[in-house]
Figure 1 (spheres, helix red, strand yellow):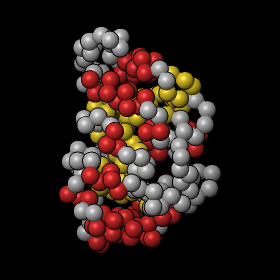
Figure 2 (cartoon, helix red, strand yellow):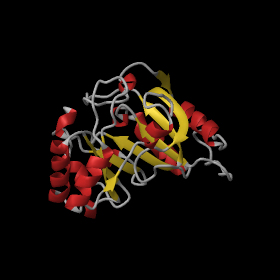
Figure 3 (cartoon, one colour):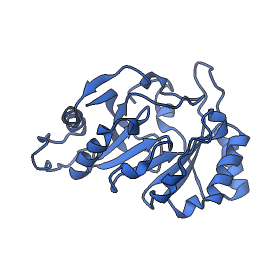
Length: 238
């Protein structure tokens, strides 16, 4: 069983998959407390769901046929959404997230797992696209990245830095160079902290971050949270 905060259909807002229709499964619970966290509502609560229950809801939202846990994978039809992201909170705190990822990949979904980088991602199925954060100093959780993750990520995976200041930027720039991240993963993402609409944190001007990237000629992608431009930044379920 898993503790689930929400399952919804939206536009993928981050990563190199940004802009694509996607089904999101947000698992409850996180062991980190980043200063700029925009999903603190997922720390507690949620409802208990089995893997089969979660799959049934994904099939409904994606437009696909459901299938029993011991049955064949459903035949995919035109118009289905075949992109699913497991996120949180921290999805890797819940062991059944691994089983869910295995079932989804067996059904030919493209599966993204967004994780803090503090948990070992090598337990995930090889087919899963791992989007792994490296926490910057101003998050309050700097130094939590598990370096063993660098040995199991590959050319389909992505590393993300959420950057709130020049200090964070220099950390991300130097970490990327020291560990040669551009040669390890599909994409290195530098994303500015989006300002909190309630004023809890200031955020970083995306133009300023873009200028720093250009000045240093970094082989990274500037990442913006598209869903926060499409909907109000505090809107849930998008």
